Length: 164
Image (cartoon, rainbow, N blue to C red; front, side, top):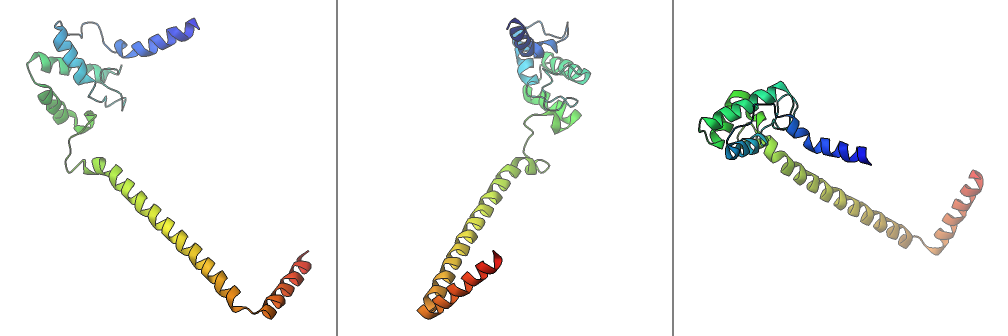
């Protein structure tokens, strides 16, 4: 049990390991702002991991760039624009909406709509098929006379005997 608690504590604290000595800013407010900003940036090496949590050298360089930009007095938007210009919009976890990212933003809604349309079509065709089958059965049974029904039953019994 003790090892489990130690493992969980180390797992939770792993983003803290990404911080190298001397990286943190002296001003706690600026450091907090830098950490919030770094949590919105993707490590291009690790993919889907923030640069704050990534141990890669690339993430370390970007962390230093973010801190340098903050110390230089840049706003969060300016820092993101700088990094986006340098590394592309892929560095942002929430890229801006534009011609290059329309598919990324709109694809879930388009796929959901197509799925709904296909579901409606399949359900309607299944209902139409079931209605057609029931109408055909009722037409066949309505058109047969009692004599024809007996003949059909005898033919079906003979067929069953032959198969067995």
